[in-house]
Image (cartoon, rainbow, N blue to C red; front, side, top):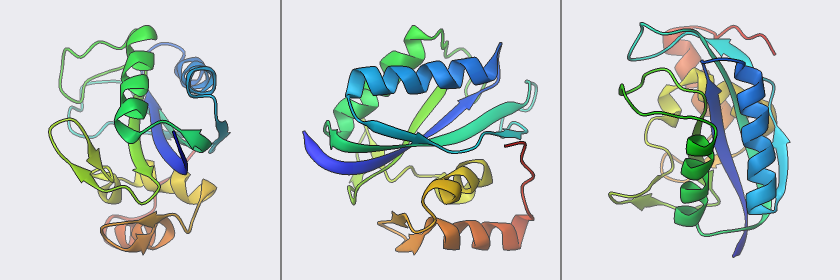
Length: 164
């Protein structure tokens, strides 16, 4: 166990989307045993595989005595499975998606875990709720804050509208 702060992206586009996200957060609290803060949720259009419903997306901030990043990732994957996630189509519809974005200053690039998340700086649906929680959270590789990453992305893609 390490004392850290971690950020997990949350997404759902099947069934009662908010229910799946809140259940996922509840299970994170129960299984990891840390404090959690949740961003507002935003409705966003799918990326990649487009033939699917709109998503609700947010970010959870976890802090306290966290497990090692690989163990935290394994917990996220078990929660997804417990809440009915099926992996039939790459980037396809899902009841719940939990992506480990940042875990302290940890940098990892192997076949089991890549930290920070390799595409977080390219996704407004991740950066907007992250900025809501922690605008100064730093990407340890790009050495930029979440706020700066979002501003750079919006300068090239335009602002993301949200529901939350």
